[in-house]
Length: 79
Image 1 (tube, rainbow, N blue to C red):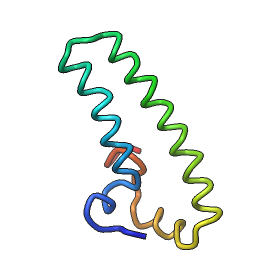
Image 2: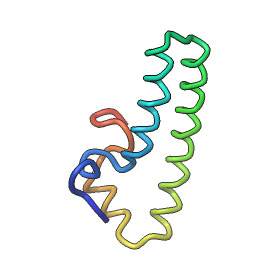
Image 3: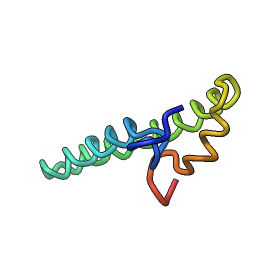
Image 4: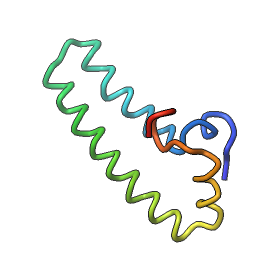
């Protein structure tokens, strides 16, 4: 498991980048509808992360230790 760089702060930095893009684009364009879609997509990713981590912890050697080392799934100091 990689636990340096961005992976030392959150376990799913690519999902974090996607959420920032989902939210940033509608904010930049001033689209309320786009912001609603961004919130929905972010929730879908949050549920996916929850399920994905369950599968990884059960099937990938060393993942539980990685979870102990890198505390946050998606947002540093939050979740």
